[in-house]
Image: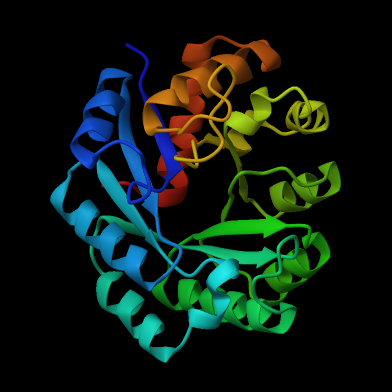
Length: 254
């Protein structure tokens, strides 16, 4: 039976209870989930949830919206948790120039610090980049994490996709790929080797069609997978197997 991995969800923000979300995910053959932190509170949640649920792993970091929170205390919090086998990445971190909840300089400083922390801890990066392609690529070249990373919820240009692939990075594909206004993204993904794609929900956000606008959850990974497999003209079993292998290679799930 085809199984899936949700490489990016926010289990602390779901409309469902955690037990219900995990039960529904299992019923949909979503057998591994990576819950992502964005601030100090969710760092604690991700670490605790990953420690208590065999199928859940954690990524620890500060989102660009909350970049002003990043400090030595946060760094020490991440260091203190990162030696656990269920903690598999630093992030979600990066740059977001769309909402500008934090100034560019603050975002860049927090991103740089987390890139350096990922290198210190020998963990991959979960990247958030929105309307900040040039600065993102510049910092990735300046402070390249040895373990690489994933550009989560990838919606950037074909140029950036090729730059990331050349660096050995993966692209995270979620419900956005099903949206009617996402033709440019779909065309870009056709140019990316399957060996550089992984699946995610970003739940509770970005529910795929036909659930767009409703709260998302990890059980909807098969919808994303089915749509993407059809678009790439490959069997869903192949898509699932290869994206799972890519996720395993990046995150080294135990």
